[in-house]
Length: 133
Image 1 (cartoon, rainbow, N blue to C red):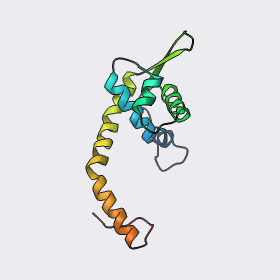
Image 2 (image 1 turned 135 degrees about the horizontal axis):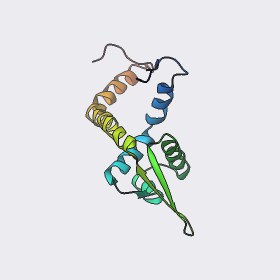
Image 3 (image 1 turned 90 degrees about the vertical axis):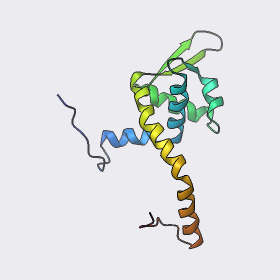
């Protein structure tokens, strides 16, 4: 049986909720770091060091969501203090492919986005421009 596809424009659509979670910068960065380490695990402290600007709380919330969604596995060593390790599941590793494409697109086109923002700001227009391609 083929799973039924959702309607992205329906606020209750599960696909929409998932895109909200995986579309954040912290998720993209965490998946990238974990994908680079795969098949090995990365400790929480190392993840935090490799993701500049992320707070401990935000990283914890992000990882909790990724674990809950089955994209990341969490392993705790029973030491004092506990050592917590994270790694991508096969499903999580498959997410790195589209996220990498999106990161590449952003890096390739950021200068054009910056130019469009500068034009808009100079014109005093804070709304999105249309027709600028």
